[in-house]
Length: 171
Image 1 (cartoon, helix red, strand yellow):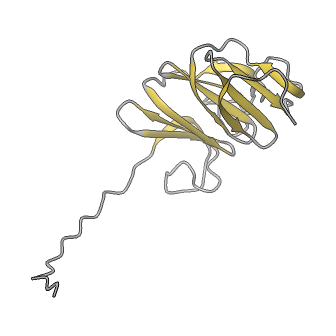
Image 2 (cartoon, helix red, strand yellow):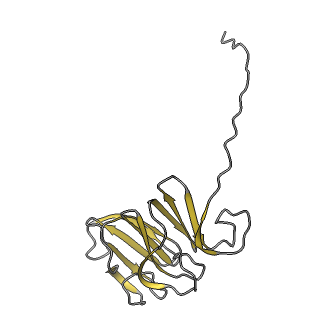
């Protein structure tokens, strides 16, 4: 079945029960469940047709978790929806039905989200994650606690293996 009036989608992301489209002109439209603010239109209600996310222009990338979505605008992130684990980058647990800019986070080059966790790749190629950490998804070496503050992911140093194979006989 065709989603009505959505002919210029450039990218799609889907959460547990909502979907969002990045439109050709850099705007975002969402539809589906909206009870946690997932649609970003300020209403907090579900919609079975696309509604425009409030106040976003110039979006270049989207990511959706279960009940939240984030948009990359220039080099900053704007997120909306549920915030029970701090996935919007703010403490207090209350979500937002409109996009809110993540303060103190700039130079963002990429965004990913899943469940109640959000991650960003920043200008120096570091990866920062925040939100739910119940399965260790913040990469801190523990599964507790969740964090609304971005945590730098420390990747293991690559292991260099040097082997002396000796002469090779191809014959």
